Structure formats: structure tokens, C-alpha cells
Length: 417
Image (cartoon, rainbow, N blue to C red):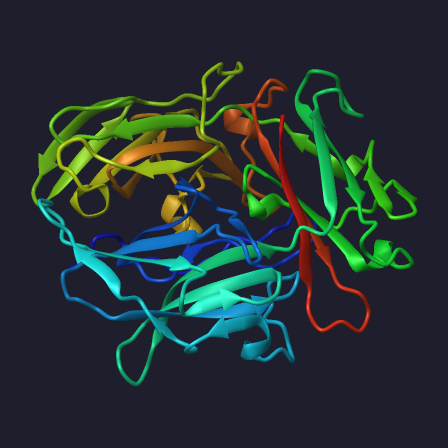
């Protein structure tokens, strides 16, 4: 049975710096839902783990049936642009007992109206352990005999902390002061690396709130002093401040939770209607989670296998915006982008969308995309920009000298505004 409207696979790319490469988690089939990547128990759209460290990345997803399908995963090392590293044998980047690792940990849902099977695995593990730093793509396949098909992808970054990274975020920017923007300053201590080619060998990527679609990639340093590189008063590192994320919580199918109007049963599914949102004109002083989500429920005991799937109805009160599309966005929106696009209801004078979500807490925002111009998705039109907004800025330092065969990740840190 179909649980969602089948949609074409249309992937958004990073237009902000003219770079076109997919580097986020994504589901590739509509019966695979709630793809999650957690580090230290927290959802992470941009997971970074340390080489030879004790930290694990926990990957999980649901397949919407009790058909007991078999899945396996395969790991590949990628370059800075997330293309498979050419000329690198698997044994050079991965200590492994096998190329394709079956996902043995799976459990059927219980006490739910919708049937699904929950699959999970951790990385690194006894079958797979990275030997070098860099970007890693984990592809999950449906093991259906002679023809295996990919159903999901997870992107992971493995760091060897050679470079010291210091970063600061200020609302006193080069274009305004305590207004609509935030500016990041970065200082790298790369004394441990050869200093004669640092400007060419090092590449920096800076990501706001794990939104890799609009990462700033390879900005030129404003100052180089021996083994120290500095980005200060760098125009490329001025970010729109945005606003705090909105949120809702659906922990029970018996009564509505935070930001919910009602929850109803229309056989064979539960439906919940959220309170109507409006475009924001002011900064919202609330604690938020920058687009994260937590799967949980209060009706049963096990969150992974006893949480219900619900159609969640979003609405945004607004006059129609010509030549503009509106999307729902969060770190949990890893399906095809068209799945999260809203449609306009003339009678209600509102944009609407219904998403198929597992019970829990979700933070989200509204993004706009101008059809004609093809601008990147942007939250400013609906959410506004306010310097007080708390944002996370992740700084990733990549290194590859001329003649080296692969790109290393030699530094990573996160700065808060």
C-alpha cells in the first residue's frame, strides 16, 4: 500500500558558492521513512566523528511494512566535492571484513496502526572501521537478489584533529550592526602541516545550522602568517541571521500536544492539524533546536518501534507570493525536496502541506524559492532576519597537497552566535 504520494527524485544543490554536489542524508524510495543519523544521542544532519576515536554514529530508518526485507550498506571514501575518491582501494581507507555489510538489527513495530520495520546500525563497528580521515558516504541497499537498489544515503565526516581551529561569531558585521546579519571570524593554527602551500592545500567549509545547501565553500583567507591562516572581515563569511525555529510536539494520539490544534482518526491513519503559522515580523525569543527532531511517545514504552506515524497538516497564513515556492525545512527533511513543498489554498488564503511523520518533537522553518530567478532556498521572507538569533556555525578544514591521492579532514569545530 502506498503511504505517500509518489514523487520524482529532485535534489537541491548548493548554489550559494557555485558548487554543485549532494552532501546530505537522503532517502531514495518512498517506503523508507524517518532516516536518522545520531551522534551522542542527538540528531545530526552534519555528523563529524574522530578518526580512531570512541565516538559512534547511529543510523536508523523505517521500512513501511512487516515484509522482513533485507538491507545492507556499503561505504565509500569521497573527495572534497563528495565524488568517490579515484584510485583509492577499499583496503586503503577501510578496515573491513566484507564490502557489503548486512543490517542485522531490525524490529517490527508494535501497538501501531501503521506497520513498519525499524532498522539500525552503528558506524564504525566490528565490520567497518575507517583508516583515514575525510568524507564518507554510506549507501543503504535493498538486497532483493540479483538486482540491489539503493534506498538511502548517509554522509559522514571523519576528522583527524591536526589543525587548531578558533572561531567567533559577531552581530557587528561589515554591512550592518545588530541588525540582520552575523559574521564569522576564523583562525587556523596549521603549524603541524607544511607551510609552503597552505593556501592551495587547505580548503575551508562553513555551515550554518547544518544547512549544507547554503554552505560557504573555500573562501580565501584575508591573512596568512607562517602556519596561521585568518579569515577576519571576510565578506564571504557574512550570513543572514534568520530567526529561531518553530516547533511542535506530538507525543500522544489521544490528545494534542504543543502547537497542535487537534488530532483525529480517519481510518486507516491518524491526522493532526497544527496551529496556523504566520510570517514573522519580530524576533521570537524562545529556545529552539535549529531544525532537529526527537522520536518519542508517551502512549507506549519503546520510541523506535511503538511510535505512531501521523499525517501532520501544516498551514501558513499568507497572501499568494508570485513566482515563489514555499518549503518546510528542518534537519529531519531528508526526502526529495518536492515532498516538503506547500500548495496555496485560495479559499483559506494559506499555504498548506501534509507530511507523513513519526511521533515526536520537531523544529522547523519555512523556506522560499524564487521560480524564475532560481535563487537558493531562503528563510528571510517568511521568518525574517534578527541578529539575536542563536545559530550554530560548523567549520570544516580539508587538506590535500599536490600529488596526494585523497582529501583529509584535519580540523572541525562549531561556534555559536
